[in-house]
Image 1 (cartoon, one colour):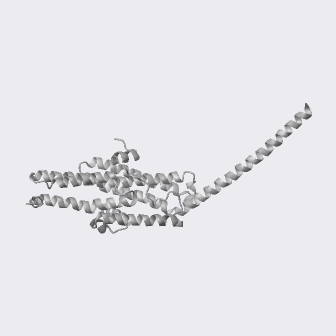
Image 2 (image 1 turned 90 degrees about the horizontal axis):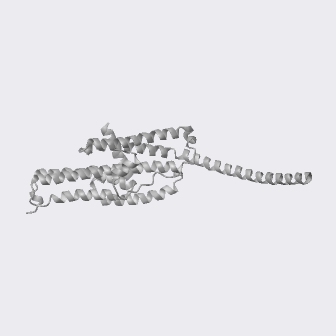
Image 3 (image 1 turned 120 degrees about the vertical axis):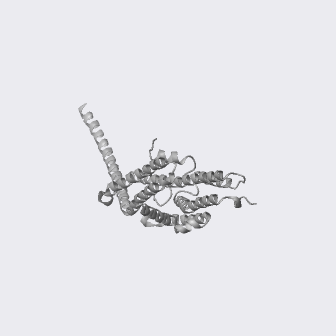
Length: 83
Length: 219
């Protein structure tokens, strides 16, 4: 079960980032960052022209922005977790 | 003599393990955050600075081995925290995406999608994802100080949210049709309201005239 989750999670990372896991782990983070920037710019272009993604609030694009602050507090507030 | 060369084998081994975790666990977690949310969020940067600072203190000469190992333990604590932060950022982003979807479709009758099966299933999948996220957070608190044990539950929550988004994407066509239907219905309602307004105005004028004529003849 644990391995299956780990495998699915690794596959998710590879699919979302667009690079093999080994490459993400081994290459300089800066190179991964450059790859992501290029890929996101390309997908933004594709998303607006694709007729199959003609529904509002395209979930393929990013929404959130974490500017600063305490992640735990933000998380608890969002998911309604109280001590 | 260089400081690095006097670090004991145990300290060197601990440093090696720390950076293995950095490469194999943290870097992929950061990559997925940078792909979907934003480039290097400030809280992540703060934690990474803390990791680096503790490691840097291992290169100050003249300390006991226990002090060096303590610094590495602290660095490891920050590395676990920042990895968990990445998972939490992902979950918050997913939460916002589902909320944005709901807001965007608040005026569309989603019960029209997939013969009425879309909305209940979406509600169920989203409920599961939220429950898993809450469970992961509680699991993290329970696992203290071994917070690494919470990684698996956060991964389960992220995968549950992926199922929600996948489900929405799979119904893109049905959603587009429901949206068209909503637009058509709004247009029809507007046309009906306009006709009603015109007819009311004509009838109002007519009856007004009729009443004035009748009162003229009567009085």
